[in-house]
Image 1 (tube, rainbow, N blue to C red):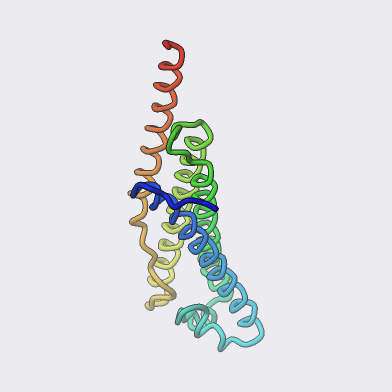
Image 2 (cartoon, one colour):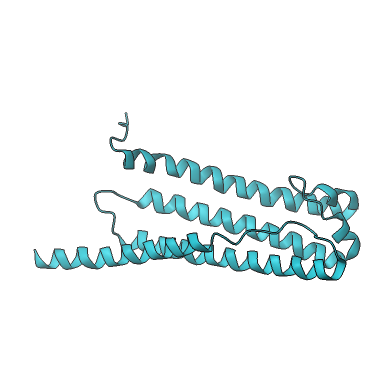
Amino acid sequence: MKTLPKTRTEQILAVMPILAWVASIGFIIEGGAILISYGISWLDPEAAKNLYRGLNLFNLRQFNFWHYTMSVSFLVALAMMKSWVSYLVIGTLSEFNLKNPFTRDVAMKLEKISIIAFGTWVVTMLYNAHTGWLMKITGELHGNWLSGEFIFMVGIVFIVSQVFKRGIEIQSENELTV
């Protein structure tokens, strides 16, 4: 039988993979729901009025099916990229060991997370630019403005990955001097 984690840090690290799984599955469901609704809207344009959680792109679909498809593609890509980041967090947490936290695998995964999160931010900014351009042409907002505030999170994760790399260097230097 597995013993319960003793320290607060161990407790948090025990719960985090569960939360990351929930987030990953939730983002997959979001992307899938948008994609299925989009497929239905090919046959029934009225379905574009409620793509996912009240998202109404009916007027955009009526205006131009290509731009409607682009907007939906951005939304699906963003959901899948967020799911990918969550999945990488799961992998990172499964390899993380408090007794020896500074490993190359963990540092590499943290850096990969920051790169994919940065890509997610770029796609978000492209979606916002597309939405803003459509607003200028049509005079109405089609879809939602997405927040790009997580660029700060990307920076923090990247900094943590660099700290881990430095920790690995110090750890290997200490092993050589012993």
